[in-house]
Length: 158
Image 1 (cartoon, rainbow, N blue to C red):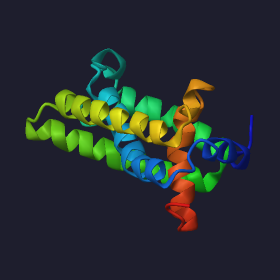
Image 2 (cartoon, rainbow, N blue to C red):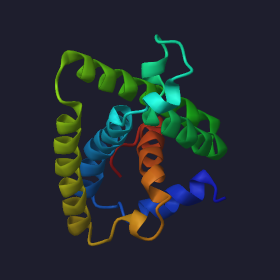
Image 3 (cartoon, one colour):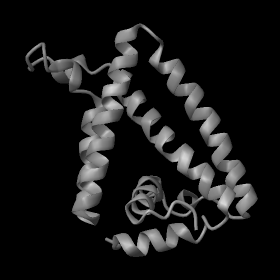
Image 4 (cartoon, rainbow, N blue to C red):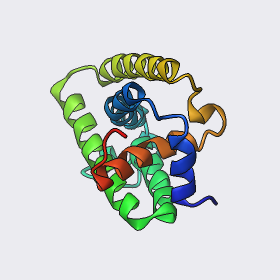
């Protein structure tokens, strides 16, 4: 497994343009939220039938997939695990709140997902470089780590 520093360095190589960096600052957290939201709405009653009724709604693909992603982040760096845990909990809370409000979570997530991916591809067009995940799907998980690392260093745009 590559180190966090080597992954971030490789990811940064296609994220040098300030416009692309700004777009990523906005879009990566939103895309990550939409992935959690989609996991939240996938019916999972068959998985949670053995859980108490109060807990069962929170045992879904978002929390299970999030837990697996957190293992990946822990292996890269414990501080990254902590940041991503907070983000996962916040994203799950937001998905739950939207669902409880009666608003169509699937529609909200889909609009955000489509708009942010269009923006991401525009950013890479400006950059003149393909998105990193075209080379390795692992970079779909490195994107949020890249944003977290920049925030940790207080360096939002190079």
